[in-house]
Structures are given as structure tokens and as C-alpha cells.
Length: 453
Ligand SMILES: *Cc1c(COP(=O)(O)O)cnc(C)c1O
Image 1 (spheres, rainbow, N blue to C red):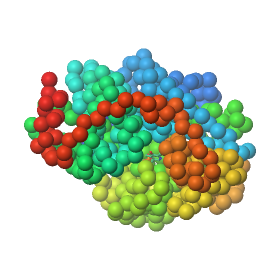
Image 2 (image 1 turned 180 degrees about the vertical axis):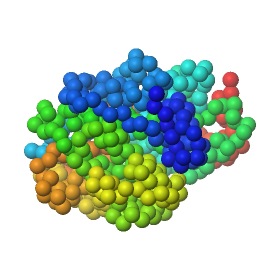
Image 3 (image 1 turned 45 degrees about the horizontal axis):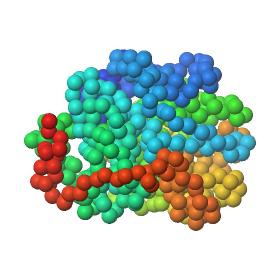
Image 4 (image 1 turned 90 degrees about the vertical axis):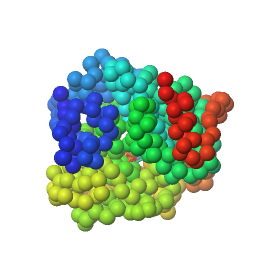
């Protein structure tokens, strides 16, 4: 059975169930698996014949033994991954992996849908009920709410700033119904976040069994290793093969860490290109060995990557033998030489992101949105700097659907991105949300009235 230790090493390792339910370790570190299970020698060849849910079951099995039976895990993966994962060939060597076919049209569905179901099962086994409380500025709320939709034993409440989210974002939350409730506030995202934090700190609300299910949960990391293997296994049919260069548009570096798990399990990765927007604290760290967070983070058009102090950096440092605490202080040096050998880090600003969207369409009829364009530009930069790798197969990750950024895409390519069924349906669906003032006593009253049984 795999145990999970904290990157701060001040608490004892725990099993997956506790790691999932705790989220963050008691010493403010992040959970990491004690062993990264190696793939069998012919694993990739066998993976070619497996569907995405079948492959996910096989990869996640060693991480989850003792917590889920093989049958329960298989059922969970089939239920979570009921959408396509298309790998698009762009030219002789380069490909785009579209991770945007899930219900919220962002790659966060891969992580959130696994974690939601995993936590749901644990809660049911323990005979508990959990209230997931989350504040959102737009996208996270819909991914989390979607992930917990219809999961028995769990109720989810999403707080959002009424005037600050787009109509589409609002509808992604307010049309769900069932066990998901949306609460609109007249304030800003920070006001929503403050109410949620105060509720977590309020002992009188302990009876509600609150959980945040946030982005650093190990349950969101593990499933993000699967699509790297899946994409590599599908290359053969497109005339490519190992080794593979992956390019990953990155913000909080959870996506990148999924790729690292696959690499440490034995996937033959030539290079992991990590591409950030103008929030370049990690490319600087890789270049200089010195880490300085960016505060406040810079506002870029790839807005889901506007992160100035990525929490998963501590996990990367850990993987390379060092230790970094939650403030970003390097407590123990890492093997920088090995890291630089495995990874190429690059920052792409908004001008270059826009230029990339324009040129990818002009040269390859490839439609990218801002996040995927950062990844594609990072790959172009790597290949320009390393001409010896130009014949190596490469896969760039597209993490959101172009229809989520219609204005930018239309202006740069002249093409109106087709709205996928997952986003189209919500236009006509009835909305339900409650409104509340930004006032803690009123919020607490609401929680006690609605959620105490
Ligand atoms: C969250 C997000 C990212 C960044 O992923 P990380 O795991 O935080 O690096 C990239 N693109 C989109 C569309 C996202 O929503």
C-alpha cells in the first residue's frame, strides 16, 4: 500500500484516505507518494489497446490499493472519464493533446472528477456527510461543483461574486442543481474567500463537516499522470513514438507534476517543457537556482495561470531531492543539474501568446486559446534552441476549449470557435442561485439553517 509523506517532513506518512480528506498535511506541507510505481517494460505497448478509463484504472491502481478495490476503482474511472481525449497531429512531429472535452471544457475536469468521486466513496464508507465549501472567481467553482454533482454523501456550496463572473461562468455553476447550491454575493472574490475562511475557522460549524477540496489535494495530482501515458500510447497510430517532448502550459504546476509522475514511472520523456505566462518565477528559479515569488501576480490573458507563488513547486523540489517550505524558502538544495536535464522552463508574454494564436492558425489551421498558445510557443522556443531535437515527437497540451475565450480567438484568427455541447446546453437551462449580503453572521445563519440535519 502506498503511503504519502509531507514535503515538510514534520508529520508521519498517512494512507491515501487520510491524504485525500486532509488535503494539506498538518505541517503545511504537501503529500507525496513514498514510492512512484514503475511501469512494466511493455506497458506502453499494452496501453495502446486500452480505453482511457481502463488505462487510468491500471495506472492509479498501485497508488490506491487498500483504499479502493480494483472493481471500485474501475467503476470510478469509467464514471469520471466518459469524454474524448483527442490527440491532433499538427505536422510531421508535433501534436496537440486536447484536454478540453470534459463538462467544464478545461483540463481541471480530469483531476476534479477523480477527486470528487474518490472523496465521495470515502465519505460513504465512513458513514459521514461532507459539505464542500468553495469560493470562486470563475473557473474553479464550476470544475469543483461539477466534480461533486450527484456524488452521494456530499453537498457542495459555491460562493461567487455576482458582478465579477461572466454569464457563461455563472451558468456553469447555477444550472447544476441537485446537491450543488450557488450563492451570489454583491462583493468581490476576496469577500467570498474571506467568508469561507471564517467558516472553516468557526468551531460552531464543526458539526457541518466542512471540506475545501482544494487544488493541492493529492487526489488532483495522481490522475493528471494518466493523459501523458495515454497520449504517448496513441502516437504510434499517428506515425510517432518515444521518446516524447511534452510542452505544458503551467500556473500552479499540478499538470507538470502529473507528467513528472509518469516520467518517474518510466515513460520515456525526452524533455518536459514548462511554459508560463509573464509570471516567470519558476523559469527564473530553474535558470538561477534562486526563488522569488511574484506578488501580486501579473494579470495575463491566460488568466488561469496567473500564479505568482505556485504551491506544487515544493513537490518538484522534493522530487529532485531538495526541500522547499510553503513560503518558498529552500530548506535543502535540490539536484539542479538533473532538473535542468529533464526540464526546460520558459516564460511567454501576452504579445507572444497572441502572435502564437495568430500564426498557429495561419500556418497549421490550428485553433488555440491563450493557455494552449503559451504551451505551443514554449515548444517552438525549445525546438528553436535545440535543433538536434527537431525530429523528436512532441506533444503540446491544450488545457481549455477555445470557445471559453471567444473574443480573443475571433479577433486573432477570424474564426468563431464552435461551442462544445458541454457549454451549449447551459444557455437554455434554468438557473438557481441564492443571494446573500457580505456579512458573516448572515452567512453562518444560512449554513446552520440549510445544512444542519
Ligand atoms: C489551471 C489551468 C492551467 C494551469 O494548470 P496548473 O496545473 O495550475 O499548472 C492551465 N490552463 C488552464 C485552462 C487552467 O484552467
